[in-house]
Image (cartoon, rainbow, N blue to C red):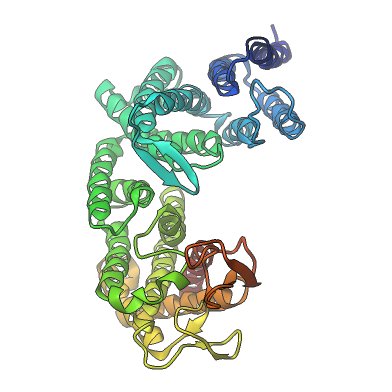
Length: 494
């Protein structure tokens, strides 16, 4: 058979799986979640063997594109209830979309990554759902408005580990780089991948795990296969990240989902980046957490004005550290000394903003809003104070001192480096204030009449939007400010 014939055969097989699942669901009144899991696993098996039949990437690209369109259309029209859940989520769209992205990235030279990543998704995710639903006393973790269980995550870890091991083992003879990995390294690598994708699934809302799990699985496997000498250090970094996340949770610096997010960021920084990348992130985290605790009494009166409290959740962790993590991964794949400066700029921005918020509360005078061109009450988004600005500059400079020993060629300009880090943080902090005071959603409580970032105030849903947009929350503002700081730092050294 030629490749076109194989492609047609695969299409017919996948289509029949959908038809069978829909028939079973309607005929026997089976829970749509069960038939959907059946399809997920079955499709993963078909996709796993696809590279053996299809060498030309045009055929898998066509298959993925067809099913993206078909699944989106049927989910909107509530067709094929055997795979499309009643809440119209886009899980069935994310599945072929992740397949398409993996094809574009790896099909020509590393098709084993596509197969292995999809088998992880196809088997580990359904098993996590089964164990999560059957747990008699589940340990719940809520992230981004969705609840999942630790029991499901344990099942996810176990099956993901097994899937990676068997997937790499199956393709080992066909790819020279896989032969360089011994069996001990393969076992450790499989477990490290499982240890990352399990928490990724845990905090991925609205079926986005169909997208995040395959992509992150492939990313980690690619990094470790290409650099098999770092497999053990990466595993050790994961261990340190577990300890860090657990201690932070026990100290109430982080919520459950926040500690999971911190583990994910820490795994990459501890395992792949070393102290050079880890210490600046730790400085930000400890400075912000301790600042929140030291001045908690002074800030408590304004807590109901802020969207979130001093215990950081997953959204806050990614908002503050997500840009830095992204820059680190880019640097790892495409090395350039400027990326490290950009990384420091992103952290300086979130550090400066955090310390400005924590210490600005102590100002005698109310902060000034450049957006409204008047003084505003403490705690209102967009307010700037002399004390907060000075604290932001000082914390940015302190971050520069922490990073100075690792700044490579830029260490010959220590004063310039530290000043640039401090001012990039200031620029990011100013961006935070301008965005927060203009387009961030701000609400007025109809009971106490205070302006707040919270949609719920005074113990009830009693607010109305008076400024900005509902979809622009504090996490998005912080993420944007971090990106501004990163760009500013690079421009200062170009």
